[in-house]
Length: 277
Image 1 (cartoon, rainbow, N blue to C red):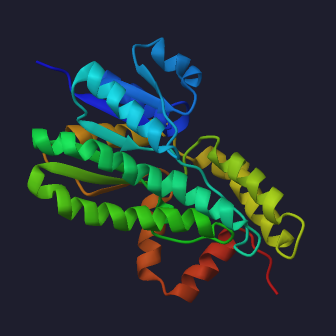
Image 2 (cartoon, rainbow, N blue to C red; image 1 turned 180 degrees about the horizontal axis):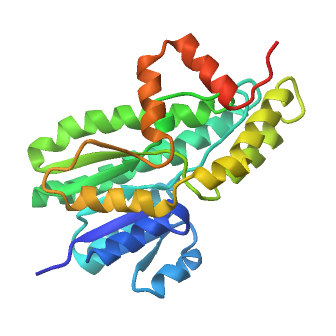
């Protein structure tokens, strides 16, 4: 029986690396993608195939998909994991940086879906997994561009699911909570560079401290929790449309539904230690 083939973007570390390993363990032929293929050496040593792919470059994405199809003849699973968090006050973040945040987190994911869908439709099967965040359902201060991308990807995933269901294709959204990766530290550094010295410096200091909090880090779930959810989703006969997994995901999403906007604002402000007037 021909092995099913999976493409995982952002596979050089964190959730992407864990997912590539989990799908390989489950018997998939796995292609791990990153801008620099040399950063995937840990994976290639374990039998996972490396693909150099920049999700902001159309030629790079086309070339990567063509390489996989020429090599394996099929793509059964696409895991859109590549992304980052651009933090800073909306007043401070350069508009070009806002555009880049959408290019990486949204347009790259949908463009890859466009590229794999003709092959999935031809086979009348396939699964597209979009990694959003609990931040695609709720908001935090100084994370407007990041949350905007995740809210957008949630909506696009819902529309895509309706469009491709008649062709036997599943669209699954994964909504991670707090995960123990480098993401928080990188976002905190970007926040301090962007808003650490201006009108929003007090807020920036509070949010950066929250992102780096050792207490949060100790509570955060390992990337394997997300990888396992993805593994279950892509092997299920009828996967759920959404999987909220990892520290805080389910209770915070539920709180956002139950509380009013003002009430939720208060909860988030207190949780992140924002200064008050």
